[in-house]
Length: 277
Image 1 (tube, rainbow, N blue to C red):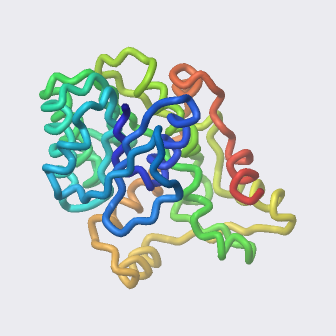
Image 2 (cartoon, rainbow, N blue to C red):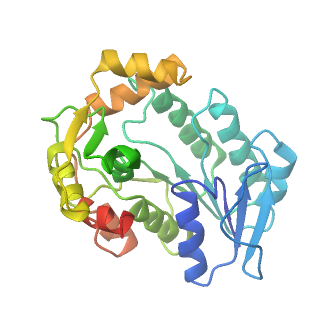
């Protein structure tokens, strides 16, 4: 049995699918009121709980061989991560894989990077066999505004001249699934990336090829971003983090997806074709 926190999320939902395809039994944690795309079955137990419910998280870890640990961006992230670590330790879980983030560290420039670091430290201190996932920028982030894309605009906070080694969520999930089931865990840090770095102009061209009409890059400069995201109700720390991630997006690419998951990382063009197929 493998427990997957955040099972309806971008990565968690894919992990659930991959594990089930491999014949694993899954315990999927979903938030109150969420409507998961699957029904409970012999190989899938669905547990509705919030990250605040320590008792429910504890029960969700009981009897699990593996635990996928994640927490959504929230001012309570540090507490929620430690709740999951404590639950996994009490249950004696043999494998824990934490979804962290690129540029995580004690002196990270962004708030989430420091919060993720606390969760990584909690895992090490707990003495649990574990691995840390610090994925590059998600390819899907460039496709979030589908309405704009279909009018010929790729909206992004990444400057036009900056290359980024963005990774597909499918590849993050496949890497996590391998770590949860087959790879020996010794506290390793795995950084899934795409196979090649690319600019937002190249991303727009890839979208244009699939949609069949020109797509222009709509670069949202910081002043506009602060204005629009504040109007949308974003707290300042999240806006600062989003801009930090995008303004200083890394071109790093490596072979971690193939090395750990056993498959080649998806190109951005492949992700676009899947999205608009």
